[in-house]
Length: 159
Image 1 (cartoon, rainbow, N blue to C red):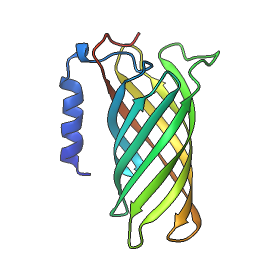
Image 2 (image 1 turned 60 degrees about the vertical axis):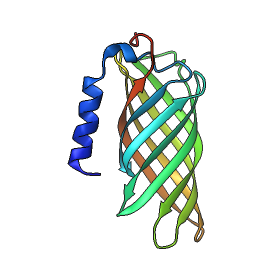
Image 3 (image 1 turned 90 degrees about the horizontal axis):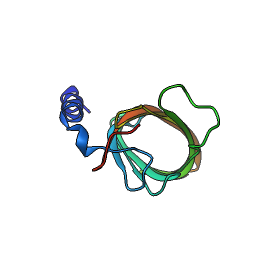
């Protein structure tokens, strides 16, 4: 991903009107943003319900196209929350494909934290994911990264 694409994405997020966003905890929300890590590229997350979400990232790793998709379970009802915003740890299981000389296929076991910024449609997240490679040969590796997502909707801003 080049600087121009990042600048355009950032500009789009700043220019969108506030009334097109709503609270990220609601089912049907779609968050789109950047993923910095393995891979380096774009991220999307769709909430199926308050706890369950599907997320994906696509980008490049070492010059090769890389994509992963995970089914996540969030633990939003922590007894201790930060004074501002909401913290939601999550775990999940997914798959990874990387287009290298011999296409890699593997399973991801992901864990991470999402921080929902109060009064904004923004989520900051960080995760780590051991990957069990099953093709072209059995092996293991680690993915991980951090990013920022902007949530689209039709209601009010998150409180």
